[in-house]
Image 1 (spheres, rainbow, N blue to C red):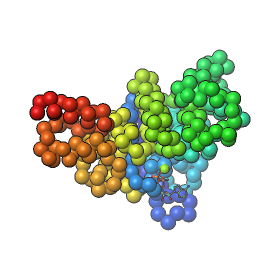
Image 2 (tube, rainbow, N blue to C red):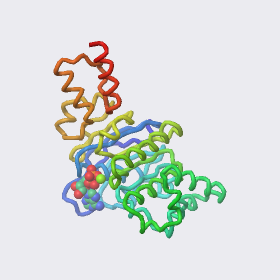
Image 3 (tube, protein in one colour):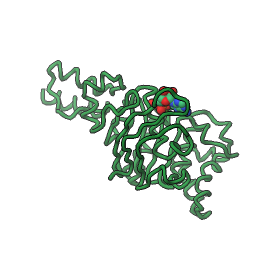
Image 4 (cartoon, rainbow, N blue to C red):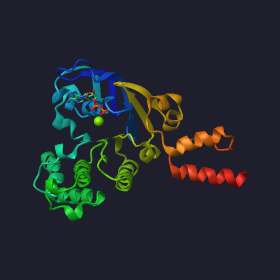
Length: 283
Ligand SMILES: Nc1ncnc2c1ncn2[C@@H]1O[C@H](COP(=O)(O)OP(=O)(O)O)[C@@H](O)[C@H]1O
Ligand SMILES: [Mg+2]
């Protein structure tokens, strides 16, 4: 059994005419880096709300099926208990930040867990350094830019060091270079600390290279689920209209034109570049 498993989850928000997610069954293994993508409004945020118990505890409405996270059925455990295992970074950081200073915000969750002072200080500084927010630790979150607030929201979740970190378009307010830095931090947490990462993101150009597993959603359903290389080369992915990385598209065009390229499809410009170097050497 995976660290996140949903079985036939269908969920309708209160008063909505139809469900926002329909019969979603998926499995995410411990230690994986999973990317969830798909067109706007397809249900990505809604499924994330199931992973940490916001659905069904905070959002009422009607839920069918089951979500099991870290061995816990989310319907049977309160949000604060699930939060020890799963951290969620929201799309809109202002919904997550409320303390008087950046460092207090980052410390908040740890205080609730009863982490000792000394350990708390260490973890807060560690998370602030990783996200490059240490110098702004005494500022009020409300005075920060959207991008800086996103970093604080990420630091708050990282400080908790949960087994699973879910990030719902965590860099939507950041420019591509800052976003890349954040994605690299997330990748390191996954690789070095073994934290299971679920990243919701439509900019696959920036993120596909990190993924072990891709789930593509469309109109509330899981449309594709599996290996990133297989999925990104598929006709279905193109038809759903997800942002296939430029390197992947270029590969497909060059291959069609008869250039002799290896069979592993590139997911990043760096992979494409080394592939071309090889091809040109041989040619
Ligand atoms: N709090 C809510 N109340 C009612 N409907 C919602 C709420 N949040 C999202 N929805 C609806 O659920 C559907 C899926 O939304 P969402 O999960 O936010 O998609 P995505 O994150 O992929 O853009 C959309 O039709 C959206 O309007
Ligand atoms: Mg969303």
